[in-house]
Length: 364
Image 1 (spheres, one colour):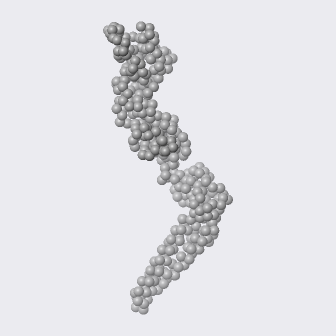
Image 2 (image 1 turned 60 degrees about the vertical axis):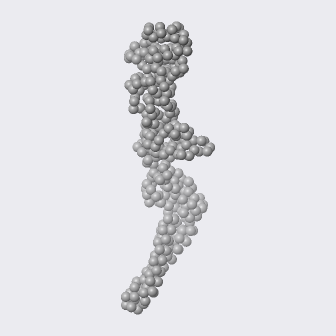
Image 3 (image 1 turned 90 degrees about the vertical axis):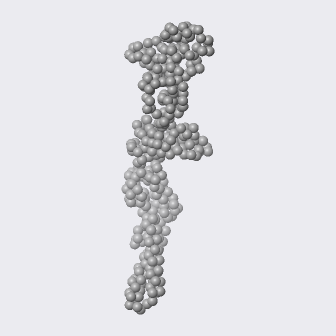
């Protein structure tokens, strides 16, 4: 297809030395193209938006439960897991019994609590008696203070034994080797880490419970990418139609992969995500100078980077090759100057447009 140039500039180009002919590209444009031709050449366009952010696209991420929304149920004492009452994936409520553990150590905790309870009752009764005797002038103040100190100490020991028994899952007043492990939050039972009948040492994980809203997306990216983003930048999951924001940027680099860690948070629509799920992430980087274009929209010709700007509509569309300058690049997005907001630029099929320019140049 012939290359159309206004006659005055075309004549001027013939007089320029060979090393200056690239300047003529500023006026180069294709001949008219019909809608069918544009479709067959695979040409697609987009309108330049002055408010558009640069995008870091196709970043691999993984869904995680925030640390503050995760509980790991562990065996408080050595024992045998009797039963797990909730299936993985099921919802649990705070305080709900999730598992039962049979442990001889529970009997010892219950014995200690019983002894502390009896001692507290004894010293409490002694304190009441001595307070009455002191009022009647029968005993000195020193004896009353000793009795009061003993009562306070016994009360503290009772509270300590009650807390130890409660943390282990036991019940005061029940002499049995059975411990009940309860959920500490509303959430979902994510993983079952032990089986009924397993003999478990103390502190062995039994199950994981997580609250699944909001969720984190963890990304491993090169340090050069991490340096281009900031906390608060919008984040999207294009394949799922979800949005969030960048929450944290790690200042350290993994010594093995040499990648930095980014964390984003998704608040709305987190029910469509599952912990451990692999997702594709885009980060919208604001505050960049220039206009955003996909890097595939640019071609190099005659030592210049060119973008093809659409002129006209319908079956009389032309594309003008416009030199541009790249100000910065973020992944597959480039920020350029030399174009104006509102112009429509080819972002697909630019190789065909370049071939038309080269073919026209060879025919001259």
